[in-house]
Image (cartoon, rainbow, N blue to C red; front, side):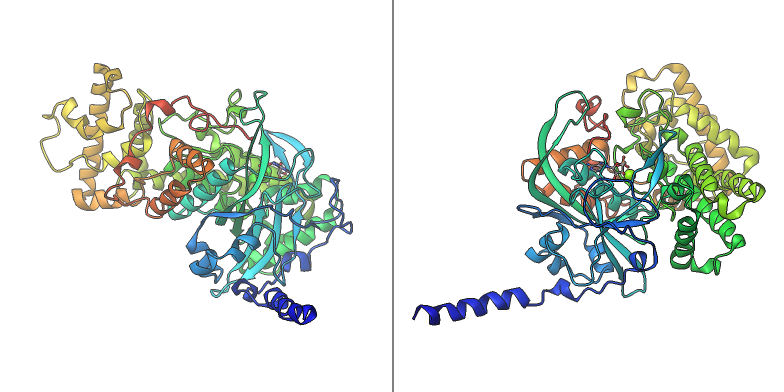
Length: 552
Ligand code: AMP
Ligand code: MG
């Protein structure tokens, strides 16, 4: 009787063990691990990894993983439906607890300059790649878990990530995408059920925080530092294999790898980087840690750490307290830092080119392309047909000065500038105060506006009106054009922080509300006006809102 009783039980066990789950139908095509040299050692101990692009390593199991949020558009790109994202299996797979057939787990080796100094081997210390999927559009997508445990590249750290930084990366990468900015994406955010100890402000107050894992998705996660490490070690053969692989896989339009193609490839990396930075400057995004290991070879925004959004327009602002002294990575420095980082990449590929001149020329073109891109972007922000250097250099220079006279919210300023009526009153009749009316909402402390500031800003608005009138654009079409490039909603630092605080209490609703809001950042969304308002005063000096560190 007892043995008969056991039979159905063991059948049941077998059924659940072998039943295919919807995610089992995902097919992987792992070109990175197939084509590039791997670390022969497979133990998960921290080490220097030579002559290899990656090391195979498995995620650490999460004790009680729970779904916090997922991005349905990213899932759709991977042929995963929303209903599958809401299954227990999805949580198991994207916490790293269950591996799918065809997955190949690995961490990549890279180096980098951190804050201007060569740091040697860094690598995926807490990122474990799952493999590559070619989706129904024929696009290659690498999936990787961030925070799923240590790898050979973990150095002194634990390999995990906390909920706070994972929410920030999840929301911001999706927000950037919807703003039209090249970026890595985020498929999912789960909590692990395990605690992770962090000293959030590096002030000697470590405390346990909820652990989390995000699944990031991108065409490729290769960084400038991925090339630098091989040059630094004199491993030119591996360097060449990685460049050839990258060109064949991600830049096939450039042709078969050769010295000439390497140069064309570098020029394209320069161009893509310039485009990305122009976008950052357009929306007031400050990356915060533009080390060369955080620069994507595809010109994607990558590695969201202590990033921030300009509220008050201050070019020397950085959200990263670790960088408060030097302000190397402040808003206004981002174009020059990219140039510096590209120079490091040029040095890394030099052994394959052995000519300085063309690399110098490409770097020079970066500067020109950035300037050109920035000027057209500024023209768009102002609703002009095109940037006219004769008049607009002065117009834009004076605008940047005006924005710094008194604490002025950059996002609100540009949205409100679209409301300035071009068609009315003869230009010189209107009083300065009347001209400034639509902009008042952008000022944090209106009583700080002095008479001189009002006069100067009024004068600028008159010039602006005259300039727009020269284009003969109507108010309506100008507003429409401006509102398509000047967002209404950005992930203001305090909004992310409020969502984090709720999530730490077990309520994920704010995260999902923000994700939804930021899907249409250029639209007015009725009922959501609160999210487009200025940062409240309590958030001015609060940790997580205005002060962030690299602790994550
Ligand atoms: P980041 O400042 O996030 O770009 O990280 C710089 C380097 O430190 C990279 O190699 C990361 O993989 C590594 N890293 C950062 N945090 C951790 C962590 N908690 N565990 C292991 N490695 C980490
Ligand atoms: Mg990084």
